[in-house]
Image (cartoon, rainbow, N blue to C red; front, top):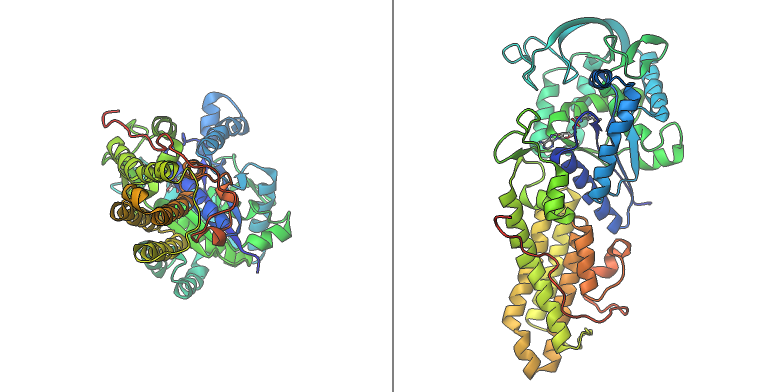
Length: 510
Ligand code: MSP
């Protein structure tokens, strides 16, 4: 069977300046996409922008331009950031594209024909910035429970989706697939919400225009979340390219932040079931970043700009930090000190030093050449066997998006290699035992090559630099996983010698 994998990020609101939260989900998607490609999968990695809704309409009006023009300007901020962060998305979807309008209207129409969408009247508290209605009970001291701003009481004619009908099908889905929502704490959250029973959901608006029109009722625009969620179908060619679509649907994983869990794990599968498509296999909700203990917000002016972090510390360092520092799924705190600490500790000391020491010794003791040893034993076997075990662990953890645990396995490989250097003392062997020094350097070289390949999804550029330092000119991205995950001497290995530090140390007060 064809190995294929479909992964998505949320589509981002164009009104926000891209910040660390957006970068976090997108880099996570990129890590998985790169990892799966290394494993020989055909990957579709989709990201994009959410461009409809009242906020966009208002912002455009304030600048005196058409909302489409506004969107066309804003979208570039995301496109440029993804390029800078080395994101390898296969698709990019904008909800204002024509192909998307067709899909949304088609789904809406079919679901209506089925009787799951009906016309009614809606009255409740509406929060403009959050684009959501809230019941009296949900308000916090009369304010929007999400952003704590004052909502307006709105009454409008509206189309409703028969959400209530999907309470039982959703409970069945959750029962059948215990890993439908990950991590477990989010699964429990969704399960208890659904168990409480679901209200029908308003899926159209008449209070503004900037959106996709309801088919054969132009007074209404489709609710932004109905519109936005459908991007996951449009993005892989729904209605346009059946072969591609059938190859990739159902989606393997929708990566999201914990704040948009209900939309993805409750509404979205219900829409799909109603239309007659399979729900996604997994929805993974990650945690939120704070800054030095504080919630980030525009008004506090403490939002972390990914451009700034990258310009100061480097792209790969930033990518690595986000996933080394905090278990994926939990909340985390961002501070300059924490970034510097990770760079100096894990990268400069552990990985960087190990690599520099090894290539310097290969240059000095073996005239820059490694060769497969005839005999191994003792600690050599331990290094080899432990590395193989850690690769398997890494793989299991990556498969469930436990990035921090996967990274721990890579650092365990480095720890055993560092210990091996200390016990074997190649500088002594170089004087006494030609054969042993070759064996030890062969094992170190292989361990580092493997560690670099395992780090490649996190640090695509730096891991490639390490391969280069090891005398390998090939692209890691094109390498074959099974070929590389063993100790051997590739025939095309070039001359190896001393290199400048791959991860320079950063001054604490930089
Ligand atoms: N447009 C919707 C998504 C529609 S998907 C069909 C949306 N956009 S958003 O731009 O507001 O947010 C996108 C993502 O950024 C969410 O997954 C959210 O969790 C994430 N983050 C926003 N702030 C964040 C942090 N401070 N930390 C981590 N992620 C956060 O919602």
